[in-house]
Length: 415
Length: 130
Image (cartoon, rainbow over all chains, first blue to last red; front, side, top):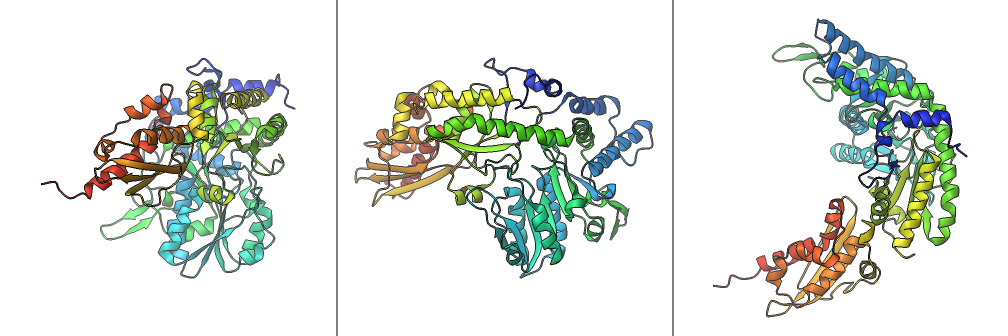
């Protein structure tokens, strides 16, 4: 159980200004949608304000003082990301807008260069559209085929026949944590097998990096994509990690300024990593903001974050269990060890959108719909689900408010 | 928003009127609300005088979309198809009453949009009157 008076948790909650602002109905904001985007601590907001008010300048070419300071802060943020995911080299960190853009970068650059007709791209049935649609497009362009690791009724990947599934696979593209169910992919069971047959491995870590300690070298993946805004950082900044040799061999994705070494009228030689993949003025402020977010997560400790979310999920499952007799259906394995801080559910015949609207009147933010995983929803036979997702600033009191909100929904719908 | 879900709304949600398909509709249309996945199909039967004499809707989704589609079908029966084409969202608001939040307006008007597009599509295929 999480002690409500936990001093560390209380100081974390106090670091997020939005959590102390009541809703228009005067309710305390109970934010349970961090899988969509996280809230931001004051230190991240301050880093953005400081950049814009103290040293706003373009990077890399300016010779004056604030330009040098902006360049240093921007590249220092990159180094923080590299250390945070244990990349071997800062040059392996490419800034993108988000995980989606990082995955598309690999699809267009590595994919069009390496994937040929007849190749197989292996992904899974629980992918976010961002780790599915780019591969559908790549398959269309190249004549490759898509294959899917199935999920069972609990939303767990079925890996008994992983070697059969991997036969002929050129690329394994898989999420680390499901955004709909929170299920954690046992990468240690799949990635070594994929490597053994020479497949390239891309992991969508958008739901993992914010919640688990991630070590890209221990995982031994080729590419790892994630977004800053789900891990306390600003929107509009994301990361593609790629093994250096692989990134070196790839053609640029976007072309323009900053990614060049020398431009003549007829030809161009390209800049070194990582800038080869960063055409145009980068999102300087938000990269620096993401650096501040990583500082914050480092101070809290990712082990604490994971432990806290496990406790919250365990507490939520315990508090929600009595509602199951009244028609509450919780999806996924219902085991805090197997899932991140995500619970998807439906309540009797109340549609998820109606449920979310009723919860909203009490200041509770949950997501309702298909969560950008329409094929998974179709397979499971769920037209929509409501999803509560937790993060380091959520408390047992938030779970209590959610349970009370569900009781109210049951009353409104006369269950 | 919670005061929106009154008894008659829940009744239309749980016991939708004119639910199902017509064997031989004059015109059908369907649409979905990609944001939330609500789906509605409308089958209209139009008699020789241009009057909607039978209607069915089918689909799935939230109480707002399904109840407002159900209530709308009761209005459609007996209407001139040309008037169906000219319906505005006021008819939906009159049916479901107050309390609908702006974010849910698309749910409430989904059935209306489908019925109108069926009517407009059918009328476009009619021969000119001259």
